Length: 209
Image (cartoon, rainbow, N blue to C red; front, side, top):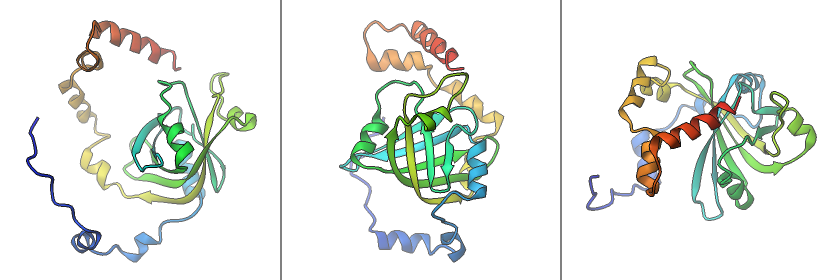
């Protein structure tokens, strides 16, 4: 890995704005304080979202969330609910939300270049009526994250277009990376067998659906 001799120069906000220029007034006005009909429909078609949180000290974390399209439920125009499906039980997001309720969400719909961003304040719930709305194949989550929406807006598709994220040819990039088993063996050391690790992980994946 290349070592950087000195840290890059830190730009003050006024210099950043001078380099970027001012946004078009129309773009600033696109931000609304609720989930409108267009955002509701987008969320209903989204099978994947990223949840950004931070602890009391401002240390940030971003967690992937995914399930069937519409897994995030719009309870009303100011409230979302995100099911907490079985995972690694580390609970970084819950720990951060307990210290700092401010969160950010980024919703994606496969094949669509535009994304939906939603910001708000979150808290955990075990409310039975909320959890029942998230039942899949007779299974309801034991917890959900409720987000009180303060801001929602659509983001242009430049990033996804540049990344060619939905281009099938881009999937070939995965072939250039080590397998998750090889990564685990290198990072954790010990007697981890990469193939056994991947087999166990694959079995856990099969139980998701």
